[in-house]
Amino acid sequence: MGSLNGWLSQTLLLIGLAFGGLGAAGSAVAQGAGTAPSDGIRGGSQPRLVFPMDCTIGKDCWVTSYVDDDPGPGVEDYMCGVLSKRDSRPGKGETDIGHKGTDIGIGHLQEGRSVSVLAAAAGTVVGTRDELPDISSRAKNAPNVSGKECGNGVRIDQGDGWAIQYCHMKRGSIAVRAGQAVQAGQKLGEVGLSGMTEHPHLHMQVTHDGVVYDPFKGRPAAEGCKGTDVPLWTPEVMAKLHYSPLVLNNVGFAWEKPDRVRVRDGLYAKDSFPSDAPVMLVFVDLMGAKKGDHLMMQILGPDRAPFHESKLDFDKKGFTQWFGFAGKRLGNRDHWPLGTYTAVVTVERPGKGVVGWREAQITVQ
Image 1 (tube, one colour):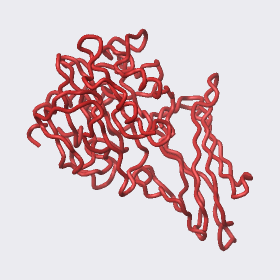
Image 2 (image 1 turned 120 degrees about the horizontal axis):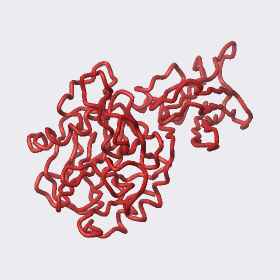
Image 3 (image 1 turned 90 degrees about the vertical axis):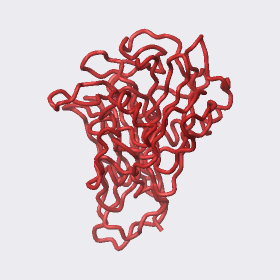
Image 4 (image 1 turned 120 degrees about the vertical axis):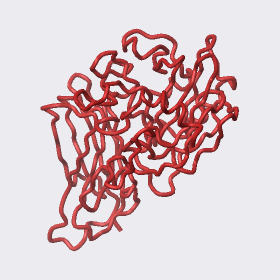
């Protein structure tokens, strides 16, 4: 919509290509929103932020990328880890800009799935967009979203120079309009896959007088990851947002060779598995792997006994995003043994122990 394009031309240059390429593991957190002050203001003019999605952190949504607090060419999240990204890379004709928002992902966007985006603070809507399709930027038929990288979204003015931008929302879901006053915790729309993004998530970007703030640090991102102020999140939200240096965005079973785009589209988000499938595979879609990490993918049979196990060491380099799968062929059998199978994915980091663990189950019937 025209009301969004004005602020896009100024603000979206900050987030640029943060949603594609190498960029980018929850009862409803809306309960936290219900306990926050309705005026959304703390400490003078600083906004006091409630959680912006109706999901359960660690169960069905994850922070998949933090604000880049490294003022130089490197990448550092607010804990001085690597779970952030760059909007572009040197040598590609773009300014190398760090990630300017907090990404909260939902893993996949299975048809019919709905996860509400909520206002993190009270304010006035100054722009919306709601016409772009929900499609991965890596899909072959992805549209050109140049100048509209945010996708469908909402921008809200909190007053005193503060503003929050919400991006990549589902087409047709925007529930507010320009000029409307909203309260903290009010529904703005739904999480989608619009704009320059390759996984369904909300990108929430906080600025003050045009300067990007890290809500986990409570100060400008350009000041670096070391040191802190009072977070912009409410204490209730900060207590739920336990930092994780690695995200297991999707773990599940596939009955054919999977790829990351189809996994994130929710193709394999099923409860049952065909008994005559030629292969039984466990897949993992992870973010934030570091050099030296050890990955183990296991399948446990209906009796919980080991059915398959694969190991991989990231001994050469780390990955902002990594996707892989392993498993067994049906072979000479005419069907898989009936019952419920469990996939277990574990990531260990030298000196840190287990930094990622997730299970998934499926039933052969």
